[in-house]
Amino acid sequence: MSWFQPEPAVSLDLVHRLEVERSTAVVDVGGGASLLVDRLVGEGYGDVTVLDASEVALAEARGRLGPNTSVTWLHADVLSWRPDRRYGLWHDRAVFHFFTADEDRSAYLRCLSAALVPGAAVIVATFAEDGPERCSGLPVSRYSPGELAEVLGVGFHVVESRREVHTTPAGVVQPFTWVAGRTT
Ligand SMILES: C[S@@+](CC[C@H](N)C(=O)[O-])C[C@H]1O[C@@H](n2cnc3c(N)ncnc32)[C@H](O)[C@@H]1O
Image (cartoon, rainbow, N blue to C red):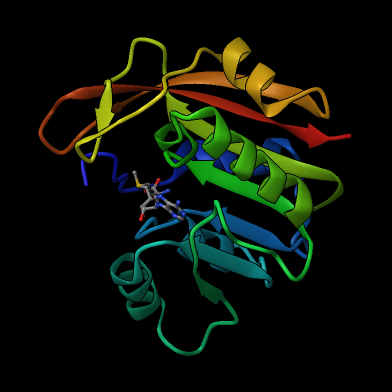
């Protein structure tokens, strides 16, 4: 849980920067136990889906929010997920970097493309090029803003990129690269 943030400040800032409307269908990919869903619901986003491969993480977030929210909880692996609807915002903090093989990156990007409406907002954060080499004990691919924009592909227009230095509860620094933009 070293990545856990008490406040998803950069995510929210970029959601606002991209002017994502409250009616937009949002998917937080690998949302885990993140508080982003709480904050989005609190701001009036009424169509939020949290997808995660971990039932434990989903149960934690669902338990926190209680039964009276309209949030959709999806237990799925993003690499094999076949979305049955379209979204206007794809958010991923600290998931894409786990996909170190070309075929996994391709599967992720196919899913992203299948899940989004044209002109959708996309926010992706990974460990930065000088960030940790492992996350949760697993090897990760690290990206500069240019590398992350490039891997997201030509159908992606960057509105803003950022570097964020996250400090873990143990006081260790984890530099992140963020890119936020829209699909064409
Ligand atoms: C490092 S945590 C980040 C959680 C959250 N995004 C945050 O910023 O606090 C990575 C999350 O991605 C989930 N995850 C990892 N691989 C996944 C996959 N293939 N499909 C869906 N979720 C995945 C994990 O279960 C975990 O909740």
